[in-house]
Image (cartoon, rainbow, N blue to C red; front, side, top):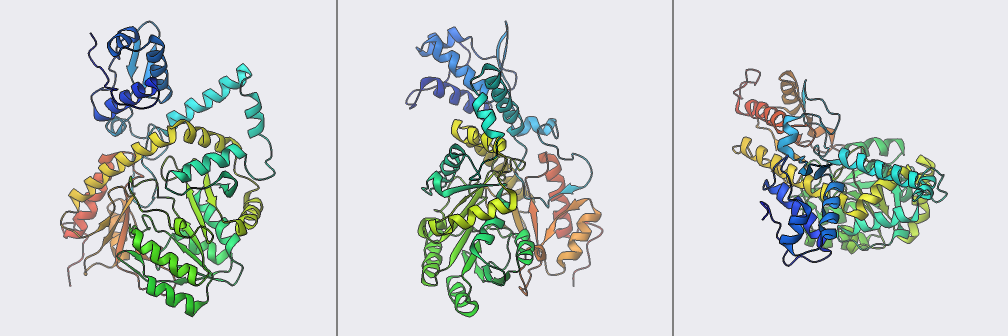
Length: 472
């Protein structure tokens, strides 16, 4: 008899995959703790009524995922890397400071298993090259790509976009050096110097610098609790004669708003009426397990759709994806070629392998689990303060009480060792800037440091900190 027995009844797909999934689920739930020895393969095969080869393949798959480690002559042991373990080993997987000021400025994903997965994938590439099986692939990823990407990489990008509910073909997908580069490429493809681009009144901060460099004028369009206001968008189209709209419908930064489907349909109808080219930035789209269809679903011929792997997998994996309608594909291709020649094919190969073998989905799931836990920490600390957040979002948007001005609050927080961003960082033009702050929950390596930083902010809000001003 075995101590732990996976339940694979009713599971579809290969049995070895179901066993590996059960091992992963048991580790995530805490049923299998770090260092636990898995049952001998023959025993597990007997208890499950499957072949020894099936169990051998399942253990190999679990090891490939970084869940277990095999020790010759001793057996197979759980190799767990969840948040609790990471909290005891600060900075184990990503190079982020675990001392000094607590940084709540950077909207980056949490520490995860991506470094382990990268090590494993590079080893696989090396082993394939040594055996001769992958020599052609390695030569291919070291060569200049005349069209900017390899077909299999574009196909993987199409599959990744498909996870968001947008059915696209690889021939319409272009690779970029991350999401920020994708935004630059889209602006270059859809506009010319002197053009006006419609945007939300608070928007992705680097967009403002891009617009200045490209000689574009940004025109803010009012938002409400559901995102872009359709009537305001209609009026802005008439008043500005703009032909391009840039927006973040899912987990808008900094406000955290996700535009519901009826609002997306209304925005799409106005875009069609005014022949707008819409640049939909969906880099946060993989974080919520349930979200409305992309805006591009309702504007297939007018929308440049952008996503990446930086927010859902690892920020240093600089691969973004742009899906463009036929009329803009040549302009997108030209913008990529002019700005970077091509994204690094080796990085694109790693990303494609992760998408195709399920590694990307597993890393994304772990990302959701950890950020949801951090959102619960924030909810407990700010229970008495009104703020905006999504249960799976990387940041919260916190309005300040009337006696605080945003810049004064930022300076007070910095004196206490906490760094943050204020609303003016994201404001466009003469937009009335709310006295609010954005707090990013993913950058700090441990929950303990995050909790400390959030408690300092809460102390300032409560007036319990000695540096707080006297209320007016």
